[in-house]
Amino acid sequence: MSWANKKTVLFASTAVALSMVAGAAHAGGFALREQSSYYQGMSFAGYGTTGGGISSMYWNPASLMGAQQGLTVEAHNTGLFPVSEINGTLSGGFLGTSSVGSGDIASDAFIPASYAAYRLNDQVIFGVGINAPFGLSTKPDFNWAGQFYSRSSSVFSMNVNPALALQINEMVSIAVGVQVQYLKVSLKSADATSGAGFPRSNEIKGDDVGFGVTAGLTVRPWEGTEIGIGYRSGVGHDLDGDLIVGGVTSAIGLGVVTPDMVNISARQKITDKIRVLGTVEWTNWSRLKSPRAISDTSGAALTTLHFNYDDGWFFSLGGEYDFNDQLTLRAGLGYEISPIDEDIRSTRLPDNNRWWLSAGATYDFNKHMSFDLGYTHIIPESTKINIAPGHQDYNATFGTYTADVDSHVNIISASLRYKF
Image (cartoon, helix red, strand yellow):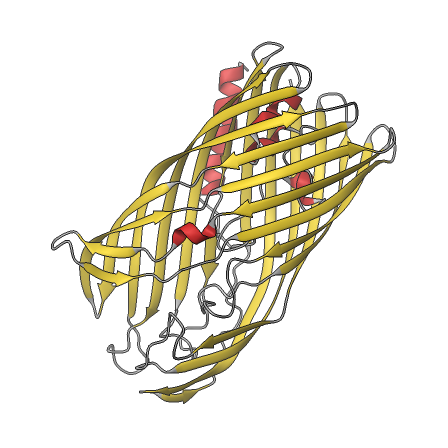
């Protein structure tokens, strides 16, 4: 099979898999960090360096310089198994008091990511990745206490990212890339005017294709040390869709810009068998602000989505140990500062700071084929929701909603990497 045909099969299979994703946000906000089984096993420590295969191009395209001669392909597949329950009380609104819990609002999810790289010569590598960088799926029980604030939320994305990396000299490599991103959003809440049991939902929905860039740098200042700096731009979307309120549908446009991200990673050789890795990541969630739904007919603002997130931060530290020539073991610890705190926390996305505990391994079957396995357990900090006067989501008609959130996440990821 030719290189072109191999690439076509790889990308077609990934596109089909992405269409099956049930998105579930497991990085700050509604981002998806799970883009590499290799780095999953270290809580994504060192993910912008060249030692872990070409999946690191997602965070730093200059890391493509780690690819071997010829064609390299990788298929990463991640299963997310979250549990999240909201238990609280709605009071002071037209319905009186309700303490019906949400049930488990989170959905299990499958997240695929595929990569291919071809070394054109000793200095230049072309690579491309297909990913789902953003995703969210929350669905409480239908008639729970907070149904007027949220009934279901869905965000789906698909991103194609071709990139070109150039090795300047033995120390420095640079790269640039393009993002082509599809984004689809649907947010529902109970329609209080629809009668007993509130069978009807209000909804805002839309989709769009937008464009962005990526860029990166890797530096090897001395033997055994590598530092990577990566950038993923935000992508502007003018979502074309509908606002449905009280059974009436209005065509709208909704302008949304996804956050840009800067990361710094390092890989340090300690001995011939041991390496230590680390990552610091900043995500510009504050740029999301409060997008407005604009009527296609009148040009008037029909409603506003109040995000108003802070910026997000992620820190991780990990290590690798070559048990023998074929087996490498790894582990890592991460801490994430969420862009969402109690002042703005909603029932749609009860996000909070969290700890990442991870372990993983790589087995090299031969010089061509490797298998990666990663596992992560995420432990959020104690989380509360307090939608009361002064909160951006508060509606006096519906009343005050205060609740505790009980959640955790298990993640299992596996990949197959092949060098032709």
